[in-house]
Length: 526
Image (cartoon, rainbow, N blue to C red; front, side):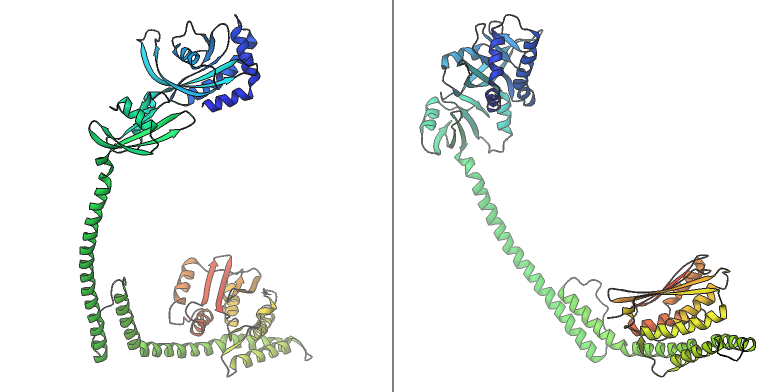
């Protein structure tokens, strides 16, 4: 605080010369009061902000013995001020600049209150104005606050903390200490950082630390018994913990060995029962160590081995059932009937020259040839799109302007393999169910895109849509092993994809009644 105020003085030397001039005046003018308020803020701020600051005085040489204080409204006279001892001590100290301290007692007599004694440590900071006149800043520190602060520090029982000045006067302490002046003088003059002393006939250790700035010495004393009490306690605790650790280690090792032996015995029993074909025990409820993990793996492998034939037989049955469903979808009699009926109608009304009938017959031949080929494995996506477009061209002749079909995909995805006749049944479902109740022109979009290592094919229409209850029923039956007679193209395609790529792939359906339907196919490409 003194350094801060002193720096302000150095930076505002002209203002402090002005303070000296104001202190000389008998009556202050209005401009003087404004300057005085600015200077008073310098000492009021730390006095208000810090509880350990009792008061601050600033005195510069003047004939009227006036000074600036933080305890009143501003300038006071020494004759009328209740605390004058600081001034006398300052005069006796001389004009040498720097810091020095003095322990004092301030007696204050508030109006209508009894006298109050306040123990303070006055820290003096002398300075010289630009005109050569001396000045001093006095910082009065409340020792009660310092004592409370020292007692709040972490310290051992019966530990004393004291601070003495250059005159061997105890400035403040955490508690009264019965230490003769000779002992204090011996401590201060000793060059050792710590030394042995007697405090009330009790051997103690004293540690000291010098403060060169204020010429103070910080001394801390503690009884030897108290100082070595903690190391002794730590040694006892360490020994007890060591013995306890040995006992606990022996007990835990015995328990673990016994449990491990039991676990190994159970593993051997499982192997013996498996070899003899006897019933195996139940799987462990929790796998929380290496032994239960081994038991879990053994039982799982034996059970998988036991049921492998059953699972293979079931998969073969599903394959055969779905192959029949594929042929049923490929040779849908309704599709052939409607196509032939359309051709017949066109033959009657058209001339013999090349026309739409020829295109329909070509498209139909291509589709039949594509679907009836003996190689029923994977095909290029480009071939699947080509033959699906042939199917769409036939339906455009039948339905005229009742629907439009839009393809959206990048040409670089045509190189990937897909299962044959994957798109045609879904588009057929789209046309059949989408235009059943809808009187508007049906718009169908086939959108194909690659995301990471998967291919997503979406057939989107703006048809009649599917009711919520019926949609939930369709989504439930998609996870069933049976192929429904309704929406056979959707269910058949879903099962074929799962059989080819696994159960994490297949078709999904989203629909809103009156808005349309989206059927999405997800298959791997890498």
